[in-house]
Length: 123
Image 1 (cartoon, rainbow, N blue to C red):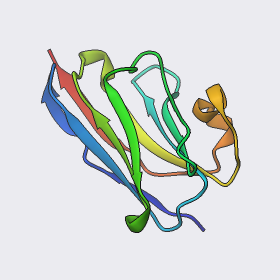
Image 2 (image 1 turned 30 degrees about the vertical axis):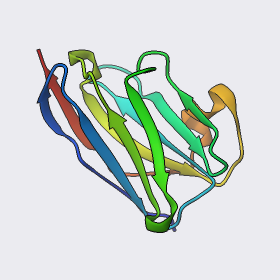
Image 3 (image 1 turned 90 degrees about the vertical axis):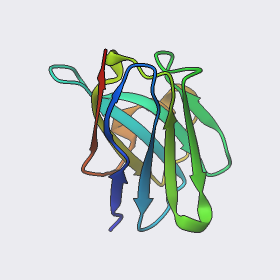
Image 4 (image 1 turned 180 degrees about the vertical axis):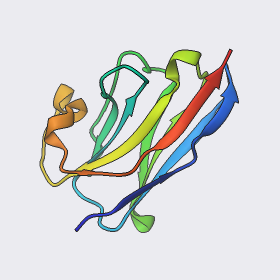
């Protein structure tokens, strides 16, 4: 059983930064970050394959960066220039599957999910 534990969420003002972490009991081939704002569907934010291929959602391109530390089985999401519309619960997800492009942001392809960490951005 794969366990994912997110941390690093919090409340910051617009323009600020946060770094989310996802500690994985087992680091699978494909890892990703998703978010869900109140009243909205969950959406893909960033995905990362073990070979380094990434996909970033258009809404956060240029502001968010996904990375990993294989030695720590940890996935990160660096979030800069945060906006109020980035307010959401952020989830880490993992899959043993190998996919590419927009599929890296496809929720249905991920098997394992963390409990989420709340990010709140004030204007």
